[in-house]
Length: 301
Image 1 (cartoon, rainbow, N blue to C red):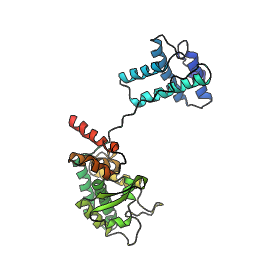
Image 2 (image 1 turned 30 degrees about the vertical axis):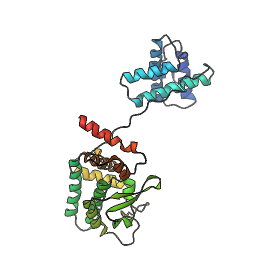
Image 3 (image 1 turned 60 degrees about the horizontal axis):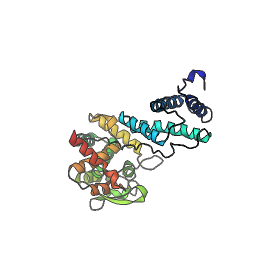
Image 4 (image 1 turned 90 degrees about the vertical axis):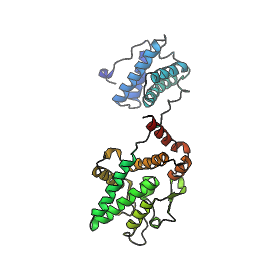
């Protein structure tokens, strides 16, 4: 480590922190920014211990927990606290590994649990604007552009009607063009199959699009690419273009956001949580319950 990079941790145990940082740089090749971040974390940890008459070498498990609690009291994000704890863990592991201390007080400390972020959502009016814009493209499209317009409209209607994962949607087989009594049979994560109901509008869009498909094809949304079907990335790009045309913020619109909108709008309409779980293909209902938190947040707002 260059002398210019050193701004030593100032305490009676500061030399131990500097030895640790030198080891991270020399043996593990840690980047300069990483070393700087670890130094700041150790300085803050050292300052906390000093107020209790302790040093870096004499702290225990309870002191680390108290430090984490203080970070939380000051409103620090859990992700940031987890990163700081990682630095402290590695430091104590270094002390123990080098025989400087007889135990590692950080070995039993769990990382702060990360709260699951609420999904980005679109309201029903915004979704309707997207669908209307896709329909308007179909009406205006001529000749070769008509197929692409019908395909995008079909993708949009199916996605909002079913809440499929984008990989499930673009990977639908051509046999799904006929549907079965208003349902799609979808193979999701882990090979699990589920029946997903179609809306009247999505069935109509599917029928109009499928009329232009070549016979005996393998995919519902075929492509000349290596996968043989439309890619997730291509659909996402088309969707963002549609969002801009509809006057929406394209940065906040994606296939996954539409999947969130499907689930949220169903629950707003009084749908059963277990039914929504089955349609989304969630193995655990706790994953689906995030949408109930979204509804609570909206009600509070």
